[in-house]
Amino acid sequence: MRKHIVAGNWKMNNGLIQTETLIAELKKQEKTSDAEVMIAPTFTNLWHAFQSTKQSSIEVVAQNMHFAKNGAYTGEISAGMLKSIGIQTVILGHSERRAYFNETDESLAQKVDTAIENDMRVIFCFGEELSDRKAGNEEAVVENQIKNALFHLGADAFKNIVLAYEPVWAIGTGETATPEQAQDMHAFIRKTLAGKYGNDVGDSVSILYGGSVKPNNAKEIFSKPDVDGGLIGGASLKAEDFFAIVNAF
Image 1 (cartoon, helix red, strand yellow):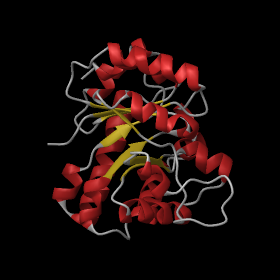
Image 2 (cartoon, helix red, strand yellow):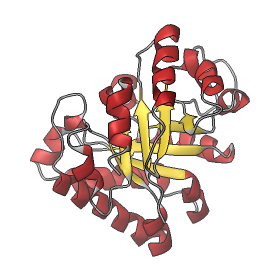
Image 3 (cartoon, rainbow, N blue to C red):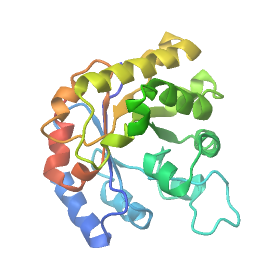
Image 4 (cartoon, helix red, strand yellow):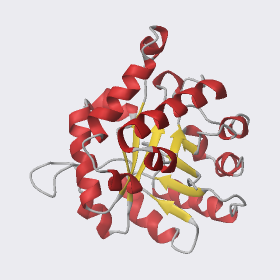
């Protein structure tokens, strides 16, 4: 059975005091669903967040990671550094990383390899721009992003990979793909995986939806058979909203 996952990507928000406060609020609202709950604070607060959530069901994950083991990469963070403070999961390929920091399918393939080699779990993000959808090219774009970054892997690697479909036109815009649009794309993604690796892999990988998920639309989105959870942005910065989404399962 696929895992239900709700992951909160805090992006470049919350200093130490805000992080402490939000985690304390999150810990008060114990989940009542079977979904895994993750939060991704900024790098500067990962250690504190990890220590603060040790006795809870919340997993702290990283927002990004470099592909190199170490070296002259000023400002970057390695897999080993993350693991040394207890972080076991990393988000890779978020649309903002692709758009603002020129991350490519090729560089992301290197990052994925590094994460898998270090026994880390990956939340791998991908999705189309508005122009792609208007042109009817959304499936081709998504298929290429998945194939270029992931299809060099063996089937066993997918035990440590969670996919996150994020239509770029629905991130931070207030726009949201309809539940039917989300389901259609998730079903296509699962079919693409199965075509390469077989139904066992296609049926076992959790696929999250990321794109302006809120308490008032989460239940309908999560009710779709191929939607296994959400990668949540703005709504994850409010404990009440975030757990309303978690409990939508």
